[in-house]
Length: 322
Ligand code: TXA
Ligand code: MG
Image (cartoon, rainbow, N blue to C red; front, side, top):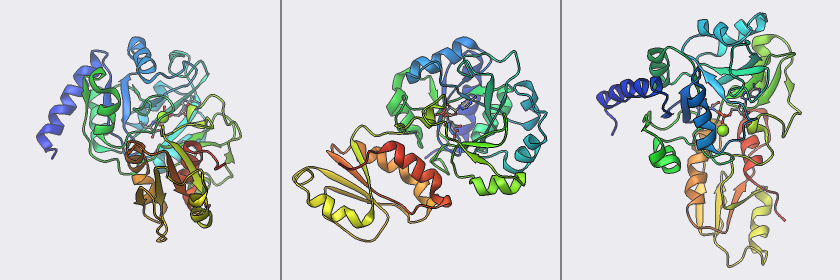
């Protein structure tokens, strides 16, 4: 059990470590981040090294308050205020033109910067006590599943981190929605904040990104992946797939939403609604990934805007059956 005193001690310790240029595991409402002082180039370099992340994949800057935004980005577009008022603090990241002083290490060499104000009370406390910006990608090795528990971060980075602040199970469990306002509004990564809600706030359409595989690492076709081969399969095809010689006598895990039960090594049922599903997805995928299976089969959830974030992550975590 985490007590209030533990958390307060961890917050003080976290701020001290960040000021010394150390990296920490930071809880947010989406996923855990690997955080460092964004104004310390050595500390930012250490994030890339530890994650094994290529230098051209930019990281998000996390802030405590909207009034700090102007220290990092150009905020002349009136749409910035509309978005900030409606969605911050919360699970939305804005990509804006960067100010000249911002280290290009953070932005992967681009002239734009991604910024988010998280809503998690512990992240907020750390950010306000620290005072500056924190660079924080998700706290997983490059291409792997994002962590939604402090234990996941410890498993992944163990002794390499001076502190993983325990903020409990992430409330949302999927990474933030990324919206670019560099030119016309463009959705770079779907998240719990849906494109319809953003369009409603802006009063104009938002383009869906067609820049797959480019600079944003979450945009790579294969990402958020377990090490076990994972397949995304329509409900109606699961039975017949499992009867194929290729899958018989193999250890198969099934991540499903429907009530239909099939016989396999490990059966995990997730809630049949997108918020509950998204909250548990990464945790359950990690469990399946550690169960020494030959295959993880994932039942295709409904295709709808409410499920867009879940479907985006599933598509990148899996291959088509073949
Ligand atoms: O929910 C989240 O966003 C979590 C928590 C920790 O805040 N962070 C997160 O960071 O998911 P990361 O680094 O795993 O994913 C950030 C995504 C990457 O796909 C990155 O390429 C993209 O944001 N990104 C960062 N800066 C960008 C920029 N200037 N232009 C376009 N994409 C950018
Ligand atoms: Mg990530």
